[in-house]
Image: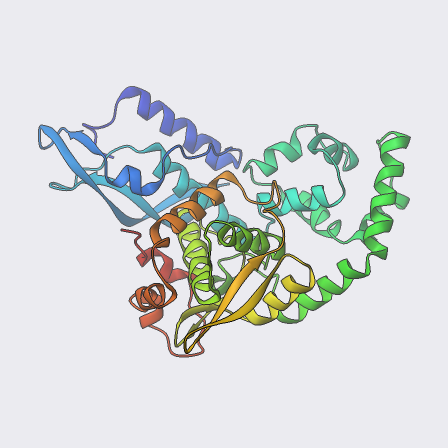
Length: 374
């Protein structure tokens, strides 16, 4: 940001952000416009002395998160003619989210959505979950909205992710919940423990999909529920969605979301195959979806061609996809809605991540920075 472009109000805003960021207590607000809208807008450039076209560049920036320097790739809005930087709240928020997530990855901390998933697994409100853990009433609310949790809190939530551990916690600690809520929670724990499908599903995915965040899965453990919602989103958008195209739509969705938020949506790994990037073990996942009556593949023939169409069996579940995730999915759909399977496969072959890898290799999310949806 140049001195000329900075006003006193902007300086105060950024100073407050840095103060909150350093303390690990910044709650991120949703971005009101997507990146493409921002990149195509015109702004007044004080260096050029007139309204100019803008463009987005990527550069390294370092932020102080909880007193630790964190370097991340930042997208910056600049004058297309002289390179003068403009203040853009949406880009700043995206960079701060990336910095927070990078800090979480380094310290093996749960992500906000993972904390929410643990809480919702037991049917608890934010306030009830906080009281159960003998924390302040608004603690869980802050964590789910982006504040960095301390390591002791993180360890306890991680422990309670397993139903059998929750039962141990409930029986060995003094709980501040009323009798009705306590009875309901114990009933939920018992159902989870006895849910054969739940337990088998966890073991099944544990064999083939890592829950350990790494660069190959976009620093997110595999999220089957999220993936199902993504598949249903695309399957219900068009009249005919073929499997080959779906795999590319998922890849672009995960990569673009990672590029802008520092984490993937689904936690899938994508392999370099002849027809473009393909989710690792995807046929296995589709088999599980068919068994769960979420979506299945129907094979039909059109002349000499065999087509594999994705058929949804239910609606997109409410509350699984965030507003930011839905925004990205819509952008991907709009970009490729008129592409056939061959066209989108050919398009994906031009991406740097695909060109830099060999058949069978996993395409790192690090290449997401080079993807542009123009």
